[in-house]
Length: 256
View 1 (cartoon, rainbow, N blue to C red):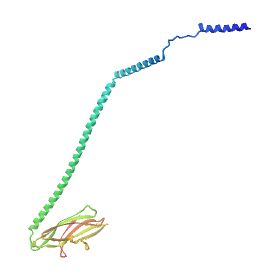
View 2 (view 1 turned 90 degrees about the vertical axis):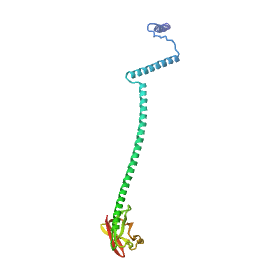
View 3 (view 1 turned 90 degrees about the horizontal axis):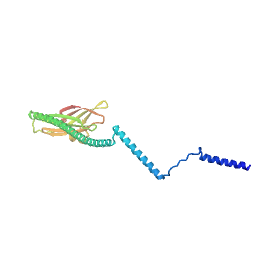
View 4 (view 1 turned 135 degrees about the horizontal axis):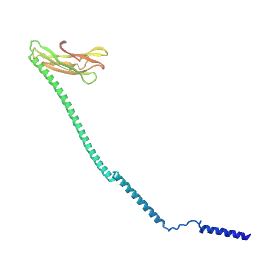
């Protein structure tokens, strides 16, 4: 029994040896030992060479395709400088345009003022011509009895709601030139209010400033002033009367 057991152990040992050193034995590779830092250095060198080669190939491909980075950067720099120059020129042109607009506005304002002045001078010239004709007529008038006239009655809105300004010229014609007129002027103002006609008479009976309507002259006298109408009333006409000793010596009416 023991012999059989020993034989079996010897057989197993032989089989193991045969499997290691025989035909079916595993292959064994013999390598030279290299430190890890040399391996790391070699790996880094290979990667650096690969990256540089890839970059060179990329640049070469772009050059072949007609794209050069240096030329592009130079062109971008040139375009930026051109843009800056154009912006400066645009700023100068905007400044010139603004100055031109200011000059145009100044010239337009001056022209409008000149037009207003010319119109005002034309009006003054027209009034002077009327006064000259009136005074020539007044100087040539002759007669035994004095006659009185109202000339150039003018009424206009004063800009304030319901307020009007008036002016007129009263004169004596004929008679004795040294005779003095003493009297007053009276205004009859016709109104249209709430669809109805109304009338105002100035000066009123209880007006504390009645003396502003009194007149005293030998040859002529200018009269001007203002009056106020009720809110919503519209002046349709104004009649001026020259009153002396309770009698009406002259009248003139203006329509509005």
